[in-house]
Every structure is written in C-alpha cells, then in structure tokens.
View 1 (cartoon, rainbow, N blue to C red):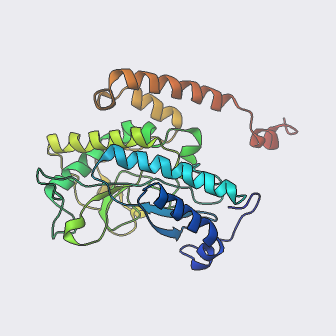
View 2: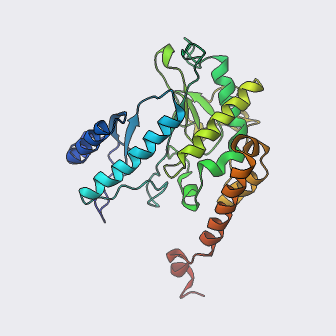
View 3: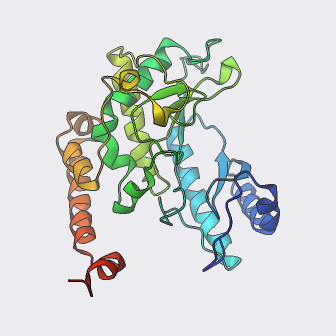
Length: 297
C-alpha cells in the first residue's frame, strides 16, 4: 500500500486490483521469469491487503522455497513502485490481520491423492490428519504465531481462527476442507499468520498429520455455520489455543510432540530465541504506555 495511506475496505474489489495493475503485472512477470507458480490475485478484507495463490507442489521443500522467493519478489517489486509490502500478522489495530494458509493433501505410492473422495469431508485418512492437527494445535501454536504481534490477529469474526475446529468449506473454522471436485480434496490449515516461518510451520503441520494418522485419531463432527458462534458442545474436547505469546512459549517447552517432530536440538534453539524476543518485547515502553500513564500517574 502507498506509504502513509489507508484505503477504504473493499473486499474482493476489482477496482483495487485495477489501481495496482502495473504492480501486479510486474509481480507476475517476475514470478514467471523465476519459474514460480503464482496463480490468482484478489483483494482481501483489509485495506491494502491482497492474496496471491501459489500452485500446488508435490515437493514440500520446493513449495516452501518458492513461497519465500515469492515474498522477496513482492517486497522488491513494491519498493520499485514506492510501496511497502509487509507480511506483519497485524499491521493496524482496527483492520483485519494477514494469514498464511497452508494447503495439505496426501499422495499414495502411485502419486494419486489419497484424500480424494466423493464425500465433501474427504477420506478417513484426511480426517485422521485433521484430528492430529487439532490435537497438537495448542502446543504447536508458538510455531504458527511466533511473534508478539502475531497474537493481535486472533479476533472473533476476523477470518482468523480463535478455536480448534474443522469444517467443510467453512472459512470460520481453523481447519477447512475446501469445496471442489473429489480429486482435489485436501485440508486448508488456517492458524498461521503471514509472519510465520514457513519451513517450521510446514514441518509441524506434516508431523501433526502423521501424529493423527498413526494413532487413527477422530476429529469429531465438523462445525457447521458460524464457527465463531459454535457452542461449547460442538467443540467439546478440542484443545484450547494459547491466548498469549508467553503461554505459547510455555506450552511449546512442555511439548513432547514438538520435541519429536522438530527435533530436540532445533526446539531448544527455537525456544531460546523466542524467550529472548519475548523478554525484549515485554520490556518495551510503547506509545500506549505513554498515552495512558505518562501524565496521569
């Protein structure tokens, strides 16, 4: 978005796309030159917020490499046009934040989608994978919300999940099976913010899927209707998400799942870095501190 400028909310607006057509044309041309699989472009709910979909890759590492290349490409092109492209989770207090949705399907030995099904809820294998993601979501939340700003994104009715839930073609849940032809069945993992480390997030999502499949977990019935208004009975037994960065850190520290899924050595270093970042974040005197207390205390 232009420096110092805030637009009006126009979700899915074609005029907003037209206004930045030279930027998006250059982005897509640069992506083509680099062999990146950029697809559709749409304007999203918040001002200056856009979504560009990267196409499916059957190599997870290649998919994440492409996503990181694409982020750098976008920031570079934006700077050439005098704009700032930011992947903060919550840039503005009164506007929706930005997520990074990971889409996962599983292939059999022949390369076919093992989640493919005429049932909109997918195969038992897909539901077991979803159940694994649900069971480990709370202790893994530090991966999906790795920064202090990350937690400001999670607000009701904001397209960011506030509970551990799943559903079919339901954007108010945290784990969504999108609509589409039977061969395309997969799950959309909606916890991560745009500020996530995609390598760590992808590794954690894969480990969670394997966790559920190996134990043949059951995710329970899908949430129907507004997931933000789901009754406690419809999400009974689901893990509760951490409310703060501090709580996420403590739950990750106690997690046997992360220790096994990410490795003891990696987790030790990851936790140490996040502990230091948390300490610095909490020590910072903010403008809100000064506005509330400087003259009143």
